[in-house]
Structure formats: C-alpha cells, structure tokens
Amino acid sequence: MNCKSEFLKKYMSKVANDLPSCPCFYPTEVAYSATDVHDNTTRRNFRWKDASGPKEKLEIYKPTARYCIRSMLTLESTTLAAQHCCYDDSMKLITRGKGAGTPNLISTEFSADLHYKVDILPWIICKGDWSRYNQARPPNNGQKCAENPQDEDYYKQFEEAREF
Image 1: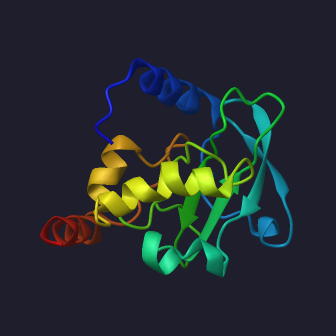
Image 2: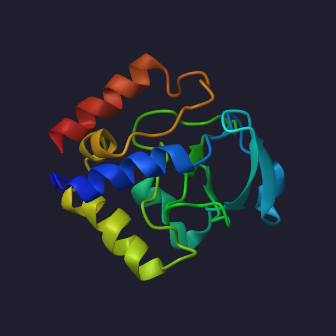
C-alpha cells in the first residue's frame, strides 16, 4: 500500500487505462452467464461475470453490496487486472464507501492465489479500513453515475472506519 516503486506506478496507470468503467446499474443478464456490456468511455464491449457468490464473501469485504461483477481478461488486455463493481439492493452502482468495488490488480481468472495476495491481503493489512484501501485503489465511477450512498450514510461509514 505504501510502495513507491516506479513499476507499481506504471502498472497502476496501465490498469486505469485498460479497464472498463463500471455500469451504473447491475446488468441482470450477468447473473446467468458471462455477458458483454458496452463501455461508452472506451467505446468497446467488455465481458463481465457475476462476483456475488458465497466465495466472494461480500458480507466481509463489501458489506453494503448485494451484487458485484468483475470484468474478464481480453486479448487486448495489457495488464492482468480486472474491474470490480458492486451494487446495492436497488441494483445501483455503489460509488463510494465500504461496499464499493475497486480494481483488482490481478484477475481471479489469472490466479486466485495471486489475487488473494495482491488484492485481498492489503485490505486485511488495513484491518478492513476501506477508507485507507480505497485511497490506494479508488472505486471506478467513469460513467459518472449518481453518488451512492448518499452523503449522510457515506460520512457515517467513514467515521465507523476511522474508529475501528
């Protein structure tokens, strides 16, 4: 999280440019199988898969999220990263706070073990303080979706994270 390496800076920049923006609403067809969703920002289609199952442990890692999706690697990918987007009960993108998805530096498609070491362990090291984790890996809102949760709930979550 505090690494200042040039390699990591370049990789994070590539990740930001390589990944699709999160859709503003949960694409329901992804619940049944991998689905193509058009990304207006990059003007390309990306494949997404559901990331809401029990092994994702949303109740621990994304506690206010009801649904999550993860982008799949493509032949055009220049990194091993995947976009992770999470949604509330109304299927609206969570853009900030403890339920917001963040970019995965290593896709679970490439290696579940490496994903755990590179993406999950830093969250654990932050002791679940999503505010610290999200500073290093901000949630994506490239499509400028409405802020979710509302300010009052967001500030409450922020205070809870700081007091943990």
